[in-house]
Image (cartoon, rainbow, N blue to C red; front, side, top):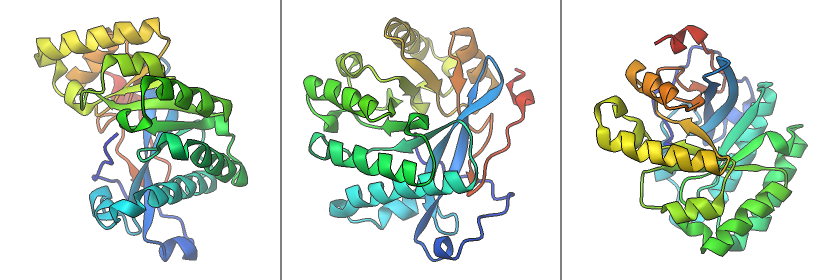
Length: 255
């Protein structure tokens, strides 16, 4: 998911001298089960050390250093989530992982999770683009190796680009997150309704759980619920909060 920039800072930040001196930190946004009205996971969204936007942070990273920065992000997200006592699954970004770095990335992330007391089975690795993961055969291997390491995987921002249904079918992640461009005002667009309905049918056949990302309007939530989408994330439900566990009010599901 895009790293949201509108962050609630109402909760007190962590009082940690090391974090205060760091260049980046994290906000967290809940993912809600629409059937049970419970928070089942949180997505870690990179921020500056004082809550600056993801764009400000990422814009300062040289392209050749991006994979090292992403690794540091995964480690810090796990550390902060553990110190906050966060429950449920933790979704973290894996945007720069390539087939050549796959094993090293998984081993490093698993070690970081275990070091802070988080079961790797609670960690969902979000891949925002499937093309860098290689050919269909390599995609299948990415999922298998990640699952063997204890992680679940998610195809993020699906619909934001032409990743192709074939790649999704081969990758067969445990999770898929609909891109905001598909979700936005879907109740007003027959084209988007048709696209998403077909995608949901495919995911049901492949046992892929779908998250509707970027829910901002009650009508969007209502359409997703009527279409059988069980999980959702977005400002309508709860905004990201900086270095704290967001509060979710189940009354927000009443549409």
